[in-house]
Length: 118
Image 1: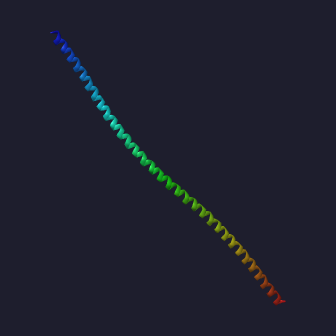
Image 2 (image 1 turned 45 degrees about the vertical axis):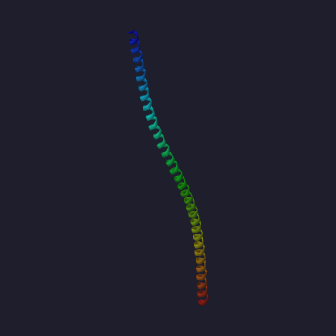
Image 3 (image 1 turned 60 degrees about the vertical axis):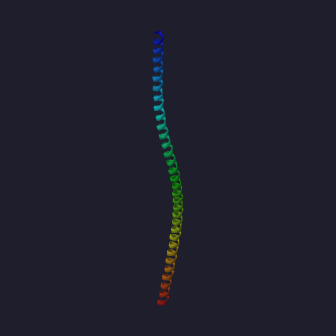
């Protein structure tokens, strides 16, 4: 009778240990699943970050290209403004020369007419 009681106590103790081990195993499995999902999420985030970095590099390249084009256009604008200024100066000089020529011509005509009337 004592042996049967001790045997039942041992069996009961072993069953409790087995039950606790199964609970711990189930908890570990759940943790492993959570870790697997977390790992997958992190891997997806890493891939997205890689894509974002590549896109950023492409945009940086495009930005630099646009800045260079803008600089070239500014230089061309300055050149065109300088050319326009030179042309305006040449036009002003031509107009002044023409006016002085016309004035001399008019003076010459007046002198000729004056000498004819004399």
